[in-house]
Length: 185
Image (cartoon, rainbow, N blue to C red):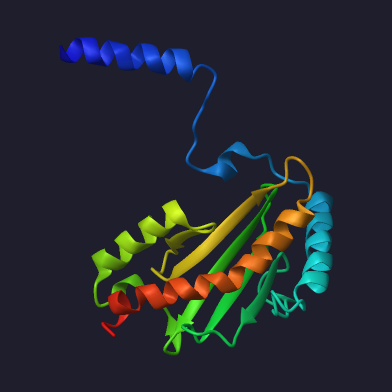
């Protein structure tokens, strides 16, 4: 019976998945941008951040990072649950634009290693990945972030970038839901 099931799975995979290659790292499937293309993408991003950032539904002043010329940073303040949301937007060398939104809570980042209930917080983040517009993760220092990544294969996504920028402040409500897992309050 196991052999029959295994054969059915192989046949279904061959039938329905023909020609589909899944790669968990989107950057690996991307080709590198030339320096000129990357510079042009950065300038398009700079222009949209300058026009959309000041809007009432975004309210974030973005500036070019002093550490990386392909990053823009800004902070959303005046939030109900977070001290602020630190936003880092990167123009990568692989034809993508990457958003990372780090909530600041009680004077610092939300860190998995300092959470009262680490396993519960990780489960909560995984659940948000199923229900939220942005995905959630933790960086290599275990700081929690919300993120979104655009590929630039079809050109610069002006309207889509605006939609993501308008969605950033919404991430604050999730910090309120995480609070019992972070500090027990």
